[in-house]
Image (cartoon, rainbow, N blue to C red):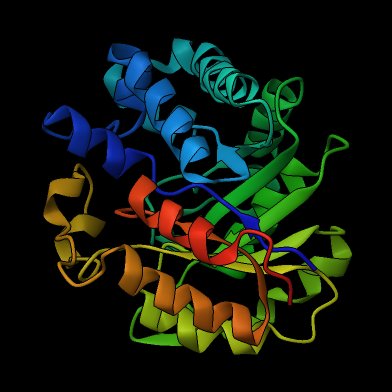
Length: 294
């Protein structure tokens, strides 16, 4: 089976290119102020060798927009994120577009999420907005079974493949950030007919621990790690911005690709990058993986 190469992290790449200070809207701020940068990042990931562009819609949730008086832009911003990704794909001439759906509340805080049933309504609204544009849905950085259930339940209201990406504890990759064993996510695969199961936005070392525990599932397995030193406790607080997160200095393209090689040797057939993993990392992966079969 051929390897599918995802893109890398959008939000941190936008901040790095712009030199701007982060706001509580993170990557969404660029849809509002600098959509041309979003388009450029999508294009650069495709040029680097990515097969899939993930829409810049990770935190376009009503609860994230409301404090900034922007809830009325909810639908418009989702459509814009989709159009930018589709346009980059069409300009490139090949590839797919994944509709990105991040966690409600804050990343890495499964304790803040609504019930799965309540969350499903929120994600269904996103699914209906993105459906005309995307090829699949990617529910990302889900940190508990309940959080994942709500996202995939909502995404499943339309007839598009749903990929689930869970985030594991950096200190123990056998567990979700909620403390639940990663294996507790497995029943969702058959219940919602998931098209892929991935691990994302965790350290590469934690992904090393998680990936072998996903072997044996009847869906493609994947991984895309982040390049943060750690998730700082202060980042978990209300109003925190990503300037509280420190980037690693030992995770260049070749080093990151070495980690990815290990995941593929085990079970992964879908790989890419999350926060702090840029086009140069994807280019290195493409050089090593394009056309390679396992």
